Image 1 (tube, rainbow, N blue to C red):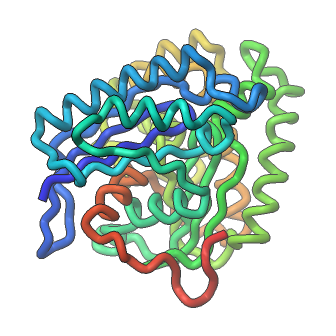
Image 2 (cartoon, rainbow, N blue to C red; image 1 turned 135 degrees about the horizontal axis):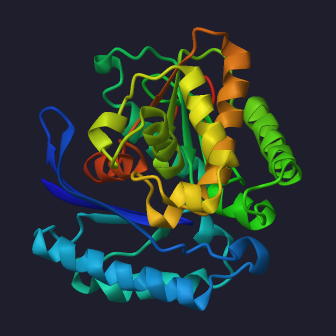
Length: 330
């Protein structure tokens, strides 16, 4: 069964076309793409989607729709999820209508999902094969996006989760106005992150886990930095064997570097150059807080499987349970 999943966030829009093996409940990639369109440009300040950002995003929607047609994805087997930027925008209906027009006969309506559903889908996508790979639960899954960060805890299913209003684009627009960032800028961003992580501790709990799994572009870029990659290599990044100290050192290098230094890194996507410092700062602070709650034996890793995979699996198993008995997402 061929399915297509689209995740449209604050900074990027991503596409996964995959074949689902019903017997094993696994996905085999046909195509996986990411394009930086910065849909959430200025939303934190204006409360609406910028006209140019909306135009860029809808152009890419038309391109993704053509790829779905080329790969013969059946109508009804495409799920399009929109996250932080469109939740916050007063003109989100313009986006919805534009996506419908782009996909035409494929019958796609973007779902502007709430943070709890975003967190659940990310957890499903990231944790499906972790036990088989030797990573012990309970897991803490952290999805650092452009406008929000989802923090979810569980083992087989979600026990608790929350969506935090911190992300690489949002914090960059609020604070990162110097190159390189001054200590004052870093401290101001760190204050916002600390407040958000206080919420995560209260609503989810950062302790009682064995493995922290980081998702999305900020985390994968930090991982590429830690590995010293000469190009972006998903196979090397996925479930990378790195120590907590290696992650934190890589974060520090990206936080303190100049824009030119970040742009010169061979693994760096051009669309992440100006926001990776803020994303790395979120990841650094989260790791530090989680290690404090769980002790020095905490395992931290990176997954290239994320909300896209969760969206794709939800097409073939829409009634999957959303939470374990202990606590639902919120």
